[in-house]
Image 1 (cartoon, rainbow, N blue to C red):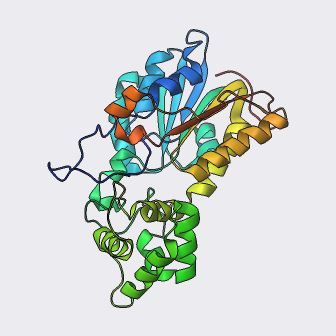
Image 2: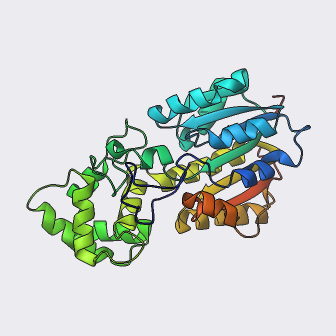
Length: 324
C-alpha cells in the first residue's frame, strides 16, 4: 500500500513498472501479529487506518472470521476501489473516509466498542503513486498536487512556489533526508523566478540538473517525499493515530504500524518505548520487521517497509469498554 518510489523505472512498457502494483506489503506479518495466533477466539473490531486497495483488510478478514473491520482512507477515489474489493465480506466491513486524526470519530460513527487491533500504514498508496494526475510521481508528468485528501487546501505547488529558500532546504533535509537540500532549494528558487512550477516533471528536471542524475535512485526521490509529507501533514497525522490507538484499544489489543521513512519509524519506536516504561504498552517487535527475500523479489515496494507492533497493557480511563 504505502511506500515511496525509489528506483528508476524500466522505460519499456506503458506503465513503466514491472512490479506488482497493489500487493500490500508485509501482509503475512500483519495478519500474524494482529491475531493469526488466536483466530478462533479473537472477536471485536480491527481498524485498517490506510485502506488503500484493501489488500491488508482482505487478508485480515479471511484469517480472522469473528472480527469486524473498519477501513479508513482520506482519498475518495481510493475508497471506491476498496469498497468493491471488500464487497464479498458483506456486513463485516464498514468503510469510512477519514484521516488518522479522525479515527476516534469514525469508530464512534459505526458504534464500535471493542477494538482489538489497529493497523496504520504510513505513506502514499500504490494507487496514488501510479496515477500521474495526482502529482506524486516524478516518472510521469502531472499537476504538482500530492494531496491524498483533495479537500486539503495546500498543494505541493503552493509549497514549491511560495516557501523561501531556507524553509525549502530545511523541509527537504528534515522530512526527506536530502543532504543536498540547499543546492536543490537554490535551484528551485532561481527557476521559479522565470516561471512558477505547476508540473511534476518540470520540478524533477530542475532537481536532476542541480545535483546530477547518476545512480539507481532518482535525485528527486527525497524531495518529492518531503513535499508529500508536508502537504498531507503526515507527521501530525501519525501522532494523532498513535494517540487514538492508545485510547481505543482494549487490554491486549494490538497496534501495528508500517512506515517507509526513518523519521516515522523513530517516532513509532519512541512511542512504544515510552508506553512500555509507563506500563501502557508491551513492545512485540524488538527490531522493526522487514520483508522476506521472497516478498522483496515479488514486490519491490516492500524493500523500505518497517513494521513495529505493540500490545496494549493498561487502558486509560477514557477508553470505551464493553462488547463488540
